[in-house]
Length: 107
Length: 117
Image (cartoon, rainbow over all chains, first blue to last red):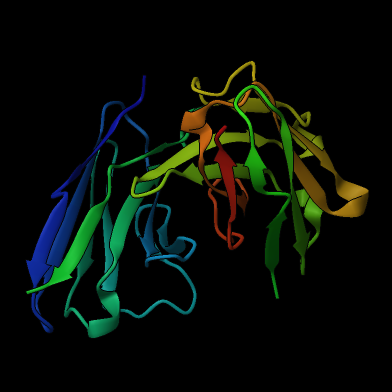
């Protein structure tokens, strides 16, 4: 079964910090990966698709990279509205799989 | 503006059935696959299943946890997709979301399903 290993599961950071979240796929998924932000009580919002393409309307401080099995979401300068939980989602196989999530909290 | 909206949630007893609906607007519904996801209280996101667009056969795929109990269907003329949930278990309690496309972009606001006696 396809597995997505996301790390870290949580992190504490300050406004202005650079934050990096990683997802590792158990099989080659090319660039069939998206990154999502979820705030409490809200639906997920897509930030990145195709591993590295910024969704329209999403601030440029968010970026994605990677191909194959290793993927990264970077927030270049954390803003107060970025405190949330982030998930990667692969859609390469017939079964879609999320990473376990990364909760970004205020230090 | 693309919008997705779920409906049909509620309280159901273990072993019971429930049908959720997902209405899409602001786009050509038949041109997109439709996904269903869920999130149990305090847990992460889980994919439930999807239905391909008719041009790709309108076929379905399901997570192992729901295969044989849940089924997804679509009515493109009504711009609606359904998630039929049978033989419900307490562990199916979650907020259920629908989302457009194989690479899910637009999501509904979610609907709560509670399975409890």
